[in-house]
Image (cartoon, rainbow, N blue to C red; front, side, top):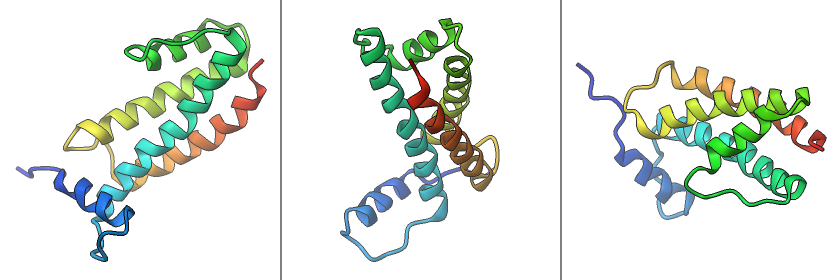
Length: 128
């Protein structure tokens, strides 16, 4: 049985991103990082927008769930669509960040994640 992702590749990627090495990092580490960062590129601006609109802060321990819950409670379809996109993106991020074996090929998940991020980033400014 394959052992799955070599987590030390994240350290190698960190070195590469910091300019500390010229050694190439494995593609899967980059893809997993891309999946995770795409989620946060959507999540944080959404959270910040909701803080402004709702005039409330979210608890750090439950912020991800609470942001999606606020979006789902709304009758506005843009909010609901954003909640659905965030839920899907969150599942992919969790899989990439915590599981040695991805549910799909990394390049397939990256494409899905980036498409969802593009759609979500169009919705964020529409939140009122």
